[in-house]
Length: 227
Ligand code: NI
Image (cartoon, rainbow, N blue to C red):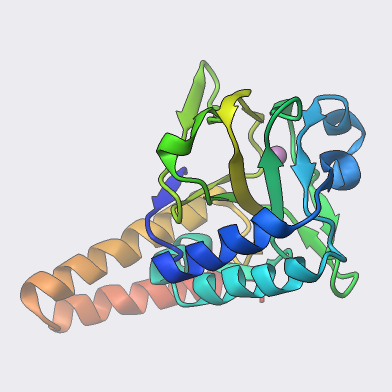
């Protein structure tokens, strides 16, 4: 499932992000790349020991923790500390690659299985050309380019790339997470059930049927969740 989550950051948070990133010093993006992806990765990244990295990472994690749509879609168990990248000038693209299945979290050396990846777009759409995140879905690629503050959640198992930025600067935050629900089909089912229960409760209020559906939701969670 690809899920577009709008306005994860509010305008004030977005301004703070772009200000801190504007003043930051950037390192070669290959610092976190695996062997295969290092060959095609040509962007810049905020080093994890950069003073802005912790501030910005916490800002994003805090925003995600308040986002009900993100929670119900991802059912996150562990989120890798968010990273920040820049596509600009000659460092402007990232070719087809896979995300490593297991990543060591940079803050506490804990291992995370990457079930879902996310990109949080930080640059205004009219400030750059190109820079689409292209996610292969078997036959062709889905090109994704979202307004500043919006997030795309997508399967870490996909092959994906970032198209060359031909004008301006593309700033983004990205990371990976391990879900409490390992199987994508179980996660999709729970997400659709949860969204439908919300709609039914909104349309008809609480009743015996929504109570029983909610019970089904939680019992499926008990069956599948690994916490
Ligand atoms: Ni990737």
